[in-house]
Length: 246
Image (tube, rainbow, N blue to C red; front, side, top):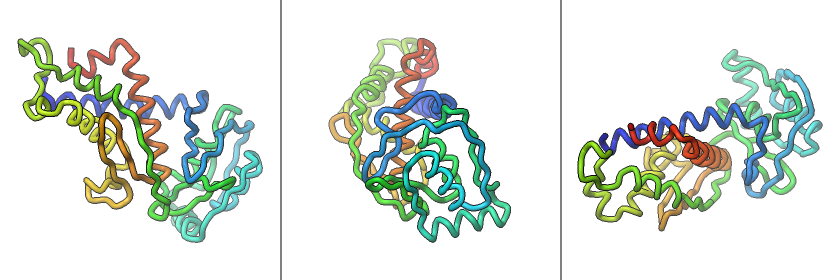
């Protein structure tokens, strides 16, 4: 199997992981909390509720009441979201819980795919348009994923033993394998936001098995989910066959 096919399979694994995390999110509280922002507010489960609101502000006020956390919306976010509903681009704001959905998932239901996002700021949750989010630096230790990638591309004495390691990866294998992990993240998380892809919101540097990421709170939340799902999939026996092509 070629190096490129291995990378493609890794990206596929990560996308499967994202789907798995979304399905399991109501039952599992994430650690660290997914309410990433300038500060962290512990995530919490919400009581059973079924709600439908015509405006973002009404939906956010209702969510604030059941969660006990103040939610503020800036004017650009409110205008963008309400115009989308009024124009028929999106359905009204709604969520349904059975007592297992976390605050993070309820906020995601209000904001994802609408061009708006939320972040934490002190005791508050703020909702703004995607491009106005603050950028935060976080460091992710991915040495375990780097080492797994290197193992899958180790040199072989026979083509039948598995993928052959490219010459460029042999020159500085640890750094280049870390960059491969970074590339998978760039492909799986808001691809259009990364500076390497022509965006302006997200940037990343690799150093000694760690990724130094400058991104929005929404971007960091998705990176946390991707890495968690990736590691979870590697715990499954069949993941070796999928990633390695055996």
